[in-house]
Image (cartoon, rainbow, N blue to C red; front, side):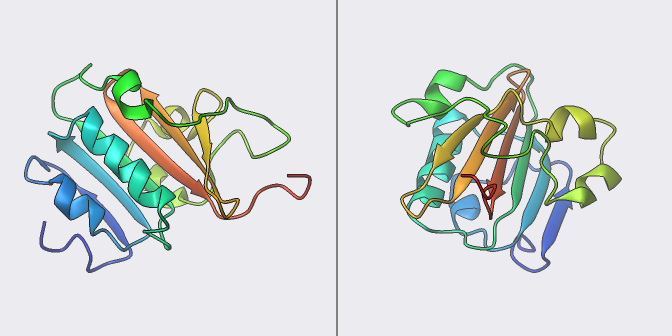
Length: 149
């Protein structure tokens, strides 16, 4: 995991050693990490870190848990102001990380943000958090809202 900040996009399997400390230092655009042992509190801290203006280059984080059905959405999203999908504010499918399709057959499921929750930062930037089957944490940053937003 020493390469977590070396290349713009990271795809790695067997990521049990990835810690919240490493994620909070992440400075690249995209990470697709499989078999992590992170928890809902860790994902919550990632969101809070983004809300504080860290991770300016971040497009997408997809963190696939080693143990299925272990992500508690209430823990991840608790105490955050969340908004449901609004087609007037953003696209249904995340499109700023097309490289994800090279690494998974679940691209449609993972990039479909209709069932995700939006969080707005003070500067107006929007992210979408999607938790798929309580096993995959998806975090997408929309660097531009729709013109009507």
